[in-house]
Every structure is written in structure tokens, then in C-alpha cells.
Amino acid sequence: MKILVSFSRIFVAALFLFSGFIKLNDPVGFSYKLQEYFGEGVLNLEFLIPFALLIAIFLVIFEIVLGITLLLGYLPKFTVWSLLLMIAFFTFLTFYSAYFNKVTDCGCFGDALPLTPWESFTKDVILLVLILILFFGRKYITPLKPFATHKWVVFATFTACLGFAYYVLMHLPAFDFRAYKEGVNIQEGMEIPEGAPKAEFAYHWKFDVNGEEKIITTSGDYPKVEGKFIEVETKTVNEGYEPPIHDFAIEKNDTDYTAEFLEKENLILIVTYNLSKSEAEGFYAIKEITNKAISQGYDVIGLTASTPKDIAQVQQQYNLDFDFYTTDETALKTILRSNPGIVKLKKGTIVKKLHWNDAEKLNLETVEPSKPKINVILKAQLDSIMKLDQEGRSSGGISWEEQKIVDSTNTIFVEEVFKKYGYPGKTLVGQGTNIAAWLVIQHSDKIGEYLPLIKEAGQKGELDMASVAMMEDRYLMQQELEQVYGTQGMTLNSNSKKPIPLIWPIKDPESVNKRRKEVGFTETIEEYSERLLGVPYKAYTLEEVKKIKENSNQ
Image (tube, rainbow, N blue to C red; front, top):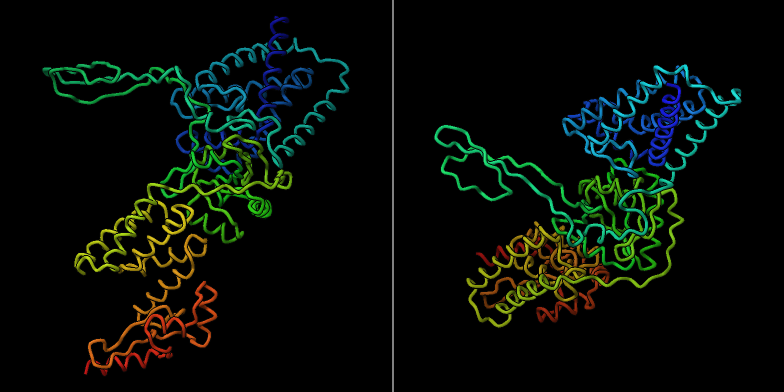
């Protein structure tokens, strides 16, 4: 019995120390696992979720301290009772999780040694047996000498654990066992090697054959049975090979940009799985380092699982100069234990990972800015649409009714482009083609609906501001309001002997030339009026135009 107790003592202590240290190295990761257990459908203790990190730190430090006290033989009664209660609870938890398939990985050894639910339960059963041996044979647990040092060793262990926990929380785990560790190429981590085992499934087909239920199992093919089909149940026979990275994607507006960004020579990712839970202080550090990165030629994007509303709020609050893309929340939590945090990529390979506290440690040499990747297919489509839009207006080869049909078709296409890509500016389709969508909307009855999108494109440099000004002026004229830049003219009484060509009334006409220059017009309003209408510029008011219209109708 004494030998059995000694073996159990060493084995259990070593396992508790190893398991505790692995989890203490990554307490945030362990807290995510506890949140799964506390969640709805598992233990239904959702009120504990906000305290998951504190509970995680307490449990792992207690686990390590128990391993030390067991080795020392210090407070043997307290130690074995604590071990027994702890392992009894976790044995129940892992059985419940495995039997009902609630949590797929217990997190016992963090990411260093992932275990399936049944493997976790088996491990806990073995530990339970060994701890029961210790419990009933505790009289054989002989304390190590010198006895007087025991409490100081325990105190030193507790203090060291607290210090280590604080360090990894303020920085990142000292040891990274995850699939996204430095040196890993994300694209390669998502690939399935040639010849890797494929997933196998069993399909249990249920039929009613002459009043009796009959089940036929196949690997997927529909069985040839003379009977009435009832249902089919699918079960996994073999999981097959699953690549280490299987849930990573960079998306925006239902478009996948993963491959494009993983090809970037110099890319900085700002990882923040949930913007509403991110640390405000972190964004000030992020703002400083991203501004520097952008100025030195790096591409910078944010990855989050938050809503567009939260994204817009954070971008405005901290004046961030980079766009956010959507990535799965679990993947972001796995990539980095910092919210927000920084990842430096070089052609998809993780070069550096940093907590926001260490943002100033990011090494940023000046690099050549990457050239935007043009969507060749979309560019060709918009070039064709732009040609259709202009041909009828310039050559007069089609009737007005035919032109309206062309405009309507073009508008439908451009609206679908907006839904998928946002405004197709010069980054997406190149300079020259970036005006195509603007032309279509300018010639439609939907200016009011899309003017905010056009303005946003102008502010981002995707469309020239002069075009934005023209659309804004046209919309104001349609609403019979004063225009801002003086781009819209018309001819009143066009069917009379004395037509009156004029520039539509302008707000603050005295300063219009200044506004025109600010958005890129090279002509003054006087020069523009002469070229457009062939008459000297005259500043009309809305009231004057209204009276002219009324007189022409009399």
C-alpha cells in the first residue's frame, strides 16, 4: 500500500502541476473554456460568465498549490480532501460533457494537449482512482524535510503563480501552443495534405415496407427499396483529417478577401474579437502604431466579429484610419489573447504577435506600399455599362424610350454591386472605371438614396470630389433647393422665342468659386457658365426662378 500511495502521490502531483502550469500560461484561454461550461445548455450558470477569468486564475493557482502540497506532504488531510472534491466535480463534468456532447474539449491541458470529451473523462477516472488511493492511504503520505520550509515554499509558489498570471495577462502567453503561433503560415495551416484521411459517414435510411419499418445503411447513396421513405439519419463514422486552421476567413459585405490579404507582403492585423468588450486604453496605443505602420507602407486592417454599428462607433470614437473586416469570433480568440491585439503578417506567415501593451515593440521598417488588386471581371462589366450609358447620350443612336430601358437595367446591376462591394471605387476597379457607377446613379431617379454612399466614396478617395459635388448639386436642384457648387444649369422657357439659360440658384454665390476650387474644379463659375450655356453668369435666386416659371405658364 505504501508503494502504491507513493506512486499515486508523485503521479497525481506531477499531473496537477503540469496541467495547472499549462493553464496558468494561458488563463484567458481557460476562461473561454469555463464560459462554455457556464453557458446555456451546459451548466446554465450564466451569471458566472463575467467572473470566468477570476475563477480560472483561482482554479489554476489552487491546482498548482495542491500539487506542491502533495509533493511536500504539507497539510495532507486538507490536500487529499481538496483533491478528491475537485476530481469528483470534474469527473462528473467531463462525463456530462462527453455523454451529452456539450463541450468538445475540456481544456484540461489548454492547447498543449487537446483531449476529446471521452479522453478527458477517462483521464479523470484514472485520477479519481489514484486520489482515492491517496485518500484512504493518507497515513502513508510522509512529509518531506525540513518541515519548517513547507509554508514558505507554498507561499513562494502562490506568489510566483500570481506574478506569472499577471505577466501573461498584461502581455501574451509565454508559450504559444495554438495553431496561430509565430512562424505559422495561415494558408498552409488551412490546407489538407494529399492522401489525408477523408471524413466518412453512415446514412441510416428508414423506409416503410409493407407496414414494417426497415433501416438500410449506406455510405451516402440512396438505396433501392420498394417502400415509402420515412427519414434518414446521418452519423459520423470517421472524422477524417481536419487542418489545424479551419475557421479562419476575412470577409466584408459577403465577399471573401482571405486569399487577397494572405498574399500581402506586409500586413498588420488589428485583432479585436468583440469591440464592445475591448479595452479603451488599448485603442489609443493601436491608433498610434497603426498610423505609423500606414505611413511606412504597411497595409492595416481590423478583424472583428462585431456588428457594423459597433465598428462605425469605434472608428469614429478613436479616429481609426483602417477598415474592419469580419472573422469568426472563436478564431479571433484563438489567434490572440488580447482585445485589441496586433499581428504582423508577411505573405500569410505570422511574424509577430503583440498585446496592445507592447504595441511600441512592433518593429516597423519602411516598406514599399502594396498595389491595390483590381477586380478585373467587375471592371470589365462596369466599363461595358459605362459605354452603354454614354453611347445613347452622345451619338443619339437610340430613342429616349430605349435609353430609359438601358438606364433602368444599368441601375439594377449597379445596385447589386453596391450590396456586394459598396461603392466600386478606384481601389476595386481602377481610375477611370470608378466613375461608372456614379454615371448610372446620376442618370437615375435614385440619387437621394445613394448620395450618402457616393459622398463616402469621395471622402475615402475612391471617387473624385468634383463628381460628388455634381451629384449633390443635381439632387438639390431636383428638390428645388439652392445648389452648393454651381454645377447644374437649365434653360427656362425653352420652347418660347426668348429662352433663358441660367445656372440654377447657388447658396452663398459670393464664395462659390472658393468651394469649387476646394473640390477640384479648375473653372470659375463665370467661365463655367460661358462654356456650358454660352451666356455670362448671373446669380438668380429661387424666388426669381419661380417667377420666371410662373410667367412662362401663363
